[in-house]
Image (cartoon, rainbow, N blue to C red; front, top):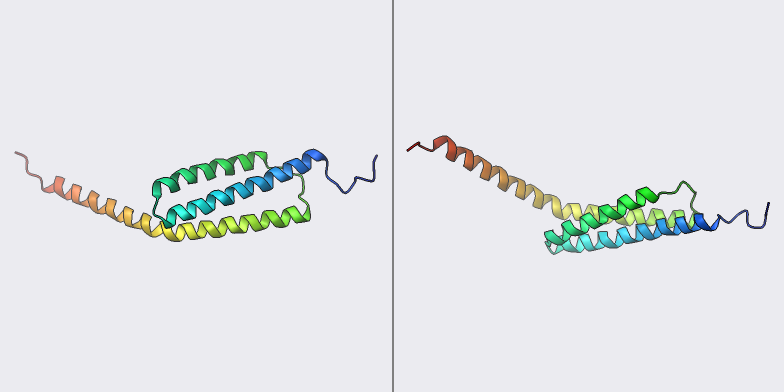
Amino acid sequence: MNLNNSSKPPPDDRNNSMQMITAYEAILTITNQMLQAAKNSDWDELVTLERDCKLLTSRLMEQHTRQPLSEIQQKKKIDLIQQILARDAEIRTITEPRMTHLQNMLTSHDHKRKLGQTYQTDT
């Protein structure tokens, strides 16, 4: 047993930890791009980025390691998650009113269509 390296995780664990941090950084990058797309009302780009983010998140969950992170890595992970959640809240602030507006438009259109069908005369 080598006691000199007992405080260091094995190389594979360090690699997994770095991959996890890198994945969170990639998610933050995409989330920042999503926020910019929302601010620009670029809904198609937002949807594309949302799919990319979901894919990265799924991969992160698949590769999730049970190995404990170092204190520095844990703080980095928490910081990244907080930034991601803050961006997500900003995105929702922009998109929720838009979604409500679209839902109201669809509901109004559906009511008009039903009224048209109800009062349509058979000829």
